[in-house]
Length: 344
Image (cartoon, rainbow, N blue to C red; front, side):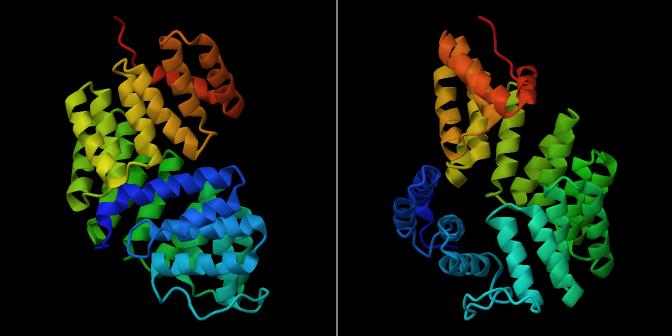
């Protein structure tokens, strides 16, 4: 357990502040704030990731490399990265270095096509690398090539059928393909191998999608029982209670989520929707604005904000948000079907 757990909100605030600054190209200020986050808190790993991304954007490849290497070390442990390794030009004959380059493209630049190229080069030199195969499958999934992602994850499962993470990944990809029954079976297999919160949360989300609320509630509760800090399960359960108009239960779980991570973007959006559904328009906008400070291109959030502003009679401001949302994603207009605004 991290020593500074009681300082979570303070350090999350610093992360949020740094995030806003680097989005405004204030790189030096953002880095100075990130330097204030100590090693013994749970936000430290995220601070390393952000440092690497900022340094990469500035063209400082060596320091970006070192920060990202430390991030990988914090996330995956000493067996995953050699901390004594120094920055140098890419060795195209080193499978581990090619894998690292793929991870950089995957995590830092979200360039999944480039990541796949590096993973393929690494696998040509050494095809016995399970993690490389896994990240290749995830890169296919994130780039929308879902059938290729399934084929790749199936190869990995043939190599190691007892790894629950691979079955969970397969369930996630099948969910995106809308193969609901097969996705449930994959999540069930992951749970059978090792009971954990993540596959239970994913099963709950699947049930939620098809309006099977009783099953969804049970899955989210099982996930939280296994991991009381699984914020996705907590927020999903809160959102479901809000949809069912059990606002007291929803509020209890939103308060639980806030204690886990008050800066979590999914939490901010769902709590804003929860307040919107109760006609608390001004307060809902506060949460939507906090989410938009983290990512100002969230079309659905802009649409929710537009709805709240309209209900408050602020038609000009509402129209600005509405047009911005439609420009970002024309399908965002469909959120009008999701939100219940109770007529007086």
